Image (cartoon, rainbow over all chains, first blue to last red; front, side, top):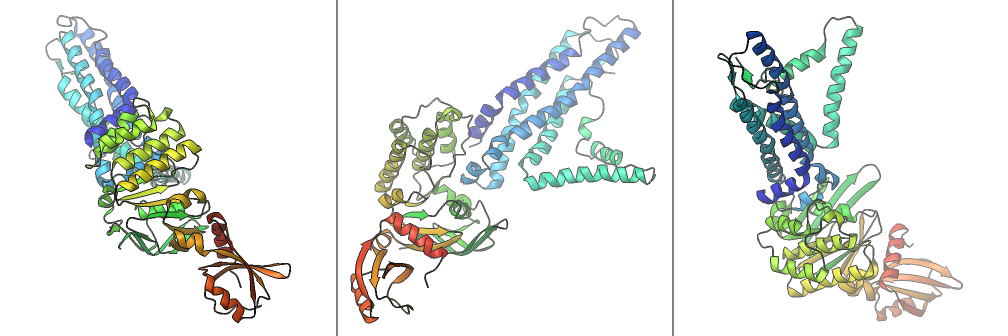
Length: 219
Length: 297
């Protein structure tokens, strides 16, 4: 069953998955655009190189978000179009079918994770790092995997929900923004949006994994 | 004989304008049950309730002796369902769609599926998105027949298909039925189509089950009777009066449950039966709907 669901999802999403995998492979290689042997380079050049590499690293959580978004939405796209009638007519419980779909999407997600790991490994091997600077290809790959998985789970849950649930989520976002406008109009000096953003992005907020330094090379 | 499908006092409401009321279906095991009704009468909604896709407000549903929705996975393992519109994944090839479907049914008969595919002339490597409506309809029928189900639920399976494809699909269905004791629940508004294949019929109109009876009762029991000197008030009758209207000096009555000796009842009330005309299924169906909307006085 799982193998067939995986194959079906791969048939539906192979183009975005391949594109994401190529992107994931390319991003770590971009961090070594400056390339070359940095072993005896002056401190200024090393710092400049490190800063540029870390700037490019910002792309990685964005990529994790994109992976989660495309796979999460794509996992249910065609079921939504058919009002889930075919899935509901299969002799498995709704919960089991959801898990099958989730597991299939989570498996496809491993493709960009693997290519990012490969890219990170090649990037690491292509530079000679000065002392005090270290490469973290495995850690970066593991973090990318976790971040993609979290984003995938969030978008998977949103995309499986009913129109009413989607309206509730949109209503909450609208409510937060409206609350902000009201507070601002009253001159309260407080704001809801940054608080919500902090709650989402600070541990244990669900998006906290996307925040922070995403560097392949660091001290 | 037990019932393959049984509903009791089923109520369901969708929005302000549509509801099913007190639906009580009894589909006998091994029968081919035609579920007739005009468009919008609630046939698809009823089927979705039967298969646990919608939740009723009230009432109970039992399929193959199991309770809906509690035992839906077990029920669906023994039920083949062809929806009104095919909802198979369009990005799959025919071969993959068959493998996908088969993975969920341990008893899936791959050899039979292949035999049906050849007879339907469906290309194996073609994507579902590029199949014609007829090919898609045949593929769906192929998938559910190869499940070797105990119950087939078919929601207008031939709607929109050309006559050749329609004949292919119905032939495959009848072949399958002749091989075993499967129960078939088939909804349609194509009355003539059901007349050929069904042995029981239920008529739904505006969310209410108007009648449920054996096909022979439906075909032979509904008559148009030309009556002279008809009484103005009709008391107890040995038949069900569906409709009556003036036609010159006579009245035309449409009755259900007619038998020849009932002529005597007319003589007893001072009336005279001039002519008894058999109605075909479609005429009977139309008269039933008319009578359910404006009951005879």
